[in-house]
Image (cartoon, rainbow, N blue to C red; front, side):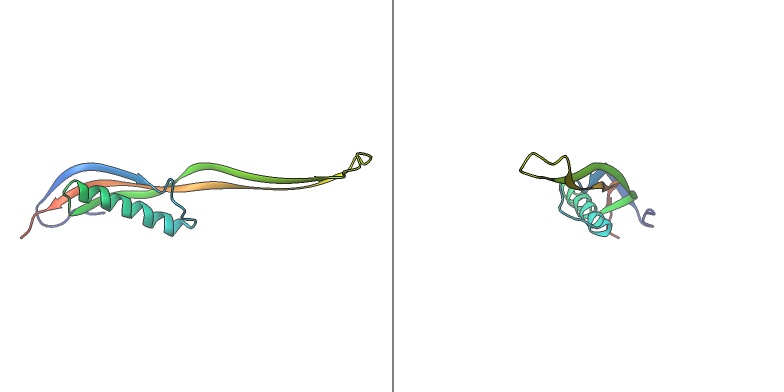
Length: 102
């Protein structure tokens, strides 16, 4: 989160999200974001990331429903169950940096 004390060069701004991962918990999603940022930085020749932050964003919602009706057709009653969940994904951004050796 804070620049290193020694000399460094900024290479590129980076951003990543947990989108498409199978992680369920927020810490697991943050781990995915951090790994993706590290991979992108390494591809650019960076040996560090100066993080701006990590946060959540809405990723959508998911719902499911089960209906059970009588097969006789004579009953106006039925039974139904439903549930829904609001999905969040984590995202993060920072600057890929190259810290010069001392």
